[in-house]
Image: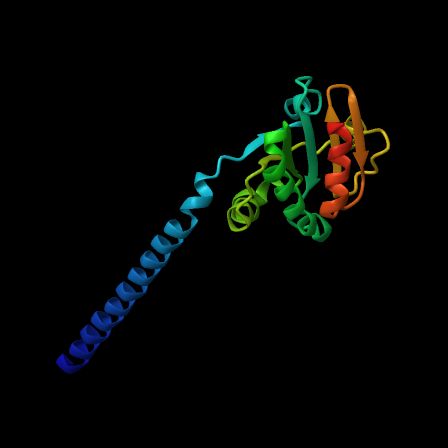
Length: 181
């Protein structure tokens, strides 16, 4: 009987030791995740409904605004993002501002959008548009917009152009240069 109790006690001790090791591994893994994700938490993502976002579509300050609607799940959007980044870098001293408007789903901001912004090192202003009533706000961006992305609005004061297509850099630069003349 004492032998059975002794074996039982040893099994419990060994089992608890393994559980503690597993717990410590889980704690260490969680700490590593926190460290690796801390930069995404530092990303200050501006989130607007359309009423709050609309001000970005109607500024009258002699600046050229290039507003690109995109999402991390949209392959053509991702392909053209480097062109918008290049435009932002090369034309910032020419009074051009690039704004990247993410249409990603709100539940993906932390898991997908912020890590994407960090990984791609996006320098342009990134805004998340969180307004599920697309049928009301899409025509306010442009009456011809079907809602597909990528889509881009370029404007300076009252002059405005809308594009429902992906860009390469040369096309994008050519359109911006029309506003500069």
